[in-house]
Length: 77
Image 1 (cartoon, rainbow, N blue to C red):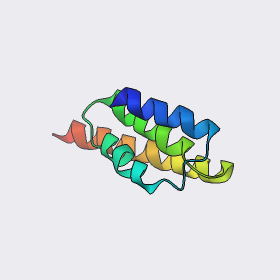
Image 2 (image 1 turned 60 degrees about the vertical axis):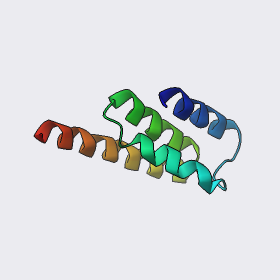
Image 3 (image 1 turned 90 degrees about the vertical axis):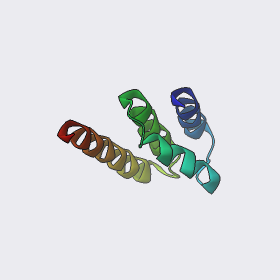
Image 4 (image 1 turned 90 degrees about the horizontal axis):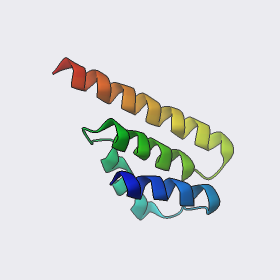
């Protein structure tokens, strides 16, 4: 899954994939992974699928926040 998310992120840098809503469930699923590398790849993919530069920054920050929250949740168990 990590490789797929990284590939989506790289493609999203070059081609506007923001209209392809079917990609979102795959990316969101990555945030549920117990592996930090997969969560990071999901954040990368989500950020790069944003339509414009300002939106990319906002989405990347949201992904970073989601990753931090996941780490806090994992640490509490």
